[in-house]
Length: 258
Image 1 (cartoon, rainbow, N blue to C red):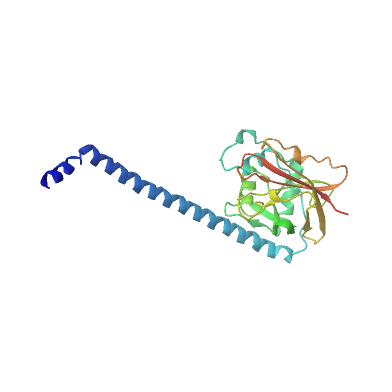
Image 2 (image 1 turned 120 degrees about the vertical axis):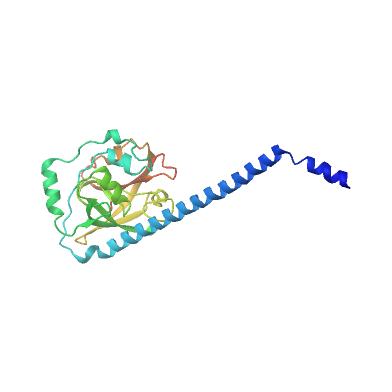
């Protein structure tokens, strides 16, 4: 019996002890990493829920003052490439000035009243609401003061934003960009829309226009042809968001229903 115990003890070599310590360390490290990942996920969900609350609060307040007037903020195409990506700095070399001096003055005048400010200090206002019953979506459409990449990125954390085009519900291609957070918030369900589905856009003055989807496709992030204003004199809306893997853009095209 003693011989058996001694024999077993001999198998517990220094190498085996070293491996056991490594396994214990790896196990503890794995637990620690899992806790960090879970914490990051919980914080991200909390942040998104707070953004949702802010957006819905804006939506509830929107029509308290019908004297607001809509203005067009010209934004550079490169904004679309940057603000929808998680990687900071991507395409940053493509950013360029997009607003003319006379537009800047008229935009500044329109922001003197009924202006909100993000936590980062960017000013914005709500110009309309978008309602898509098929995916239970209802959000204010925000418009920034300067149209810069940083400003647009900050606003997209609050609600979908105007990216390009004419004034809301006017002739031309009104482009709206929103985040796909891979849940039921913001533009996450926009990729599930189908041709023939309809939605409405309501201005501050309560004029509502109904739009019907006539096309849906995906493009490379650098392809911004969807923002073309050649609509043949019609009122159109383009909804833009990411695919679930963020590698492409989902484009949903709609036209006014008369």
